[in-house]
Image 1 (tube, protein in one colour):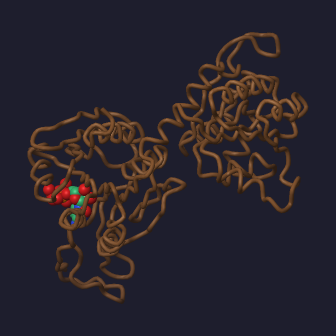
Image 2: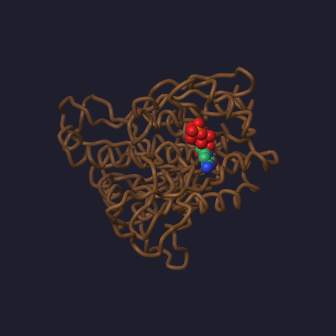
Length: 396
Ligand code: CTP
């Protein structure tokens, strides 16, 4: 593969010496490395080793060159931040967002993908604190290169030995390769529910959490796209790196999506937009009365259909949640809304809502169909982009 800019962070553990061999290997493969050593790493290996291997400045402190703001420059210029070996302490610092040295600052300031290769004593690795921090980082989209079982520095066998060099090179280059898949694309995603106001304390809404759209946005970013995420009210955190537009009502989502549509090369509508809104929104809280009340409703605009009517080269993907005649109904939407593809899930029995598993199929053309299977929404987002590459004719 073509060379990439990689930031390698080295922490203080016996395995620090292996980071030098990895550096040499990555340089030979054409990559350009900026190396940061933590204070503890320098107890095991000298900056000079990495300077000689990379023929570049090796960074050890936030305070070396006041004018340069090294953490921001390093965070922006590199395509990937790899921390090898990652100690329990640095894993915890990054999971918690502590920024007490140069490496931790870069990890916090970067929007590039993060890879960590833990190496430590078995008990430290298995400690609930370490496991929780690793799970947090994974949840945020970081790649954890699992340590192996083998002979440890303590002269005993156990889990915690740094993954071997082949695995590290493969995983680093896999991330770099993935980042090129959607490079140059601008993806517009609508996600989450909308809220339609009845009065200052009441609204109509639905059970959507926006997780599917958020995971599709996260994966698009990991594949190198610029992402505009128009997100309805949800507690689920959006991915770092997306251009986020928070909206509440369908009307706001409509305006935000249509404003960004002209620059989108791909648009994916995952939002569960309320089809109706109260005809009247009351300024004051409505008092209860003895009589049964009715709420008059007005149709909301169909955002996806509007994108379809105006589309000018944008590859447009809709979602359909159906409970009966699942695929036939979705195919009708595919044509009526001028879509290039539609992802369909069977939501009978409440499946598909929330943060759990889902099952999807992607339909396109007159009878094109790619089954994405049943899996976590994160995994389905990866399969969604793989399938879309096939449909768009760029991936197979
Ligand atoms: N959609 C939209 N704006 C709306 C309604 C829906 O953008 N006002 C989008 C959704 O984001 C989704 C697709 O349209 O991509 C869903 O189509 P829709 O016709 O609303 O189907 P369902 O909600 O699945 O159900 P129904 O068959 O009842 O219309």
